[in-house]
Image (cartoon, rainbow, N blue to C red; front, side):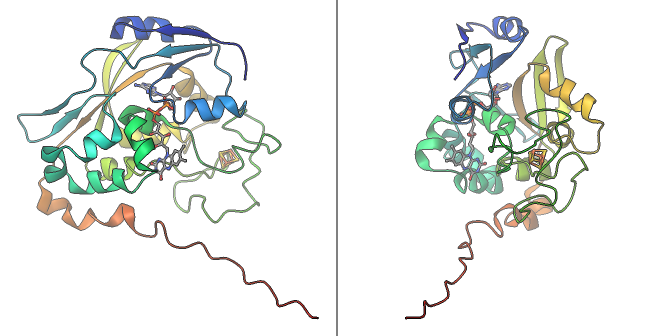
Amino acid sequence: MNLFDYARAATLADAVASGRAEGAAFLAGGTNLLDLMKANLVRPARLVDITRLPGLDRIEPLADGGVRIGALVRNSALAHDAMFARTFPAVAEALLSGASPQLRNAATVAGNVMQRTRCPYFYDAASACNKREPGAGCDARGGHTRLQAVLGWSEHCIATHPSDFCVPLVAFDAVAEIDGPRGRREVPLEEREVSLEERHKPLEDCCKALKEPQVVLLEERHKPLEESSDLRRMPLEGRHKPQEVPQEEPQEE
Ligand SMILES: Cc1cc2nc3c(=O)[nH]c(=O)nc-3n(C[C@H](O)[C@H](O)[C@H](O)COP(=O)(O)OP(=O)(O)OC[C@H]3O[C@@H](n4cnc5c(N)ncnc54)[C@H](O)[C@@H]3O)c2cc1C
Ligand code: SF4
C-alpha cells in the first residue's frame, strides 16, 4: 500500500475542495476502495473521508412519489426502510441479493454506484487492463469471458457494471445528483453508468470523467409500480446459481 494523506471532510463544500487534489479519492464505507488499496491496484495520494458529512444519510420521500436517497445511506438501511421497500421492492430486493449482511451494513449507496469493476483481469496486476492503466489493452478480450458483458461492451472494455443496486435504478430512471467543482447537476444514472464503464466513448473522454472527483447523491424518480412490475425479478435472474464445477475423471488404479 502506498503512503497517502487522510482528510476528514466536515461539509460538502469541504469534500468537493479536498477531492480536487491530484490523486484524491473519497472514502465512504471503504469495502471496495480499501480492498483495492491493499492489493496495490489503486494508489490514492489522499483519502477524503466523507462518512461524517451531515445530512447525507437520509431517505426522503418526494412530493411526486419519488425518493431521494442520500449518498451515505447504508445499503442495509435502504433495503430495510419500510417506506422504500414498499415503494421500490425491486431495488430493495436487489440490494439484499448483493454481498453479505456485514458488507451491506458498511457499504453506502454512492459507494455501491461508484465501486470498481469485478472483472478478474482488473484484479490481476499481471494482466493488461484499460481500466487500471488507460491504453494498456484488455486481456479479458480473448480470455475467460463467462461473466463479461454480452451487451454494451466496447473494444476497450468488456466488463459489466458490478452493482446489483444499479440495475433496477436504471430501470426506474433514477437520477444522480452530482456535486463537484462544476457545481451541482443531475445526470440520469443510465448515462452515468455508461461513462463509468467506458462504453461507446473514446477512452480519453471516459478517463477524464473518471478522474474528476465528484460527490454523488442519488435521487430516484417515480414510475407507477404497475408500469414496472414486470421488471421486478429481472435483475435477480441468473444470480447465485451454483457454479458449474467440472467433474474430475476417475483415476485409473
Ligand atoms: C466480498 C464482497 C462481495 C460483494 N458482492 C457484491 C454483490 O453481490 N453485489 C454488489 O452490488 N456489490 C457487491 N460488492 C460490492 C459492494 O457493494 C461495494 O464494495 C460497496 O457498495 C461499496 O460501498 P462503500 O461505501 O464501501 O464504498 P467505498 O469502498 O468507500 O468506495 C467505493 C468507490 O466509490 C467512491 N465513492 C464512495 N462514495 C462516493 C461519493 N459519495 N461520491 C463519489 N465517489 C464516491 C470511492 O472513492 C471509491 O472509488 C461486494 C463487495 C465485497 C467486498
Ligand atoms: S474487460 Fe475492462 S476491466 Fe476487464 S481487463 Fe478489459 S479493460 Fe480491464
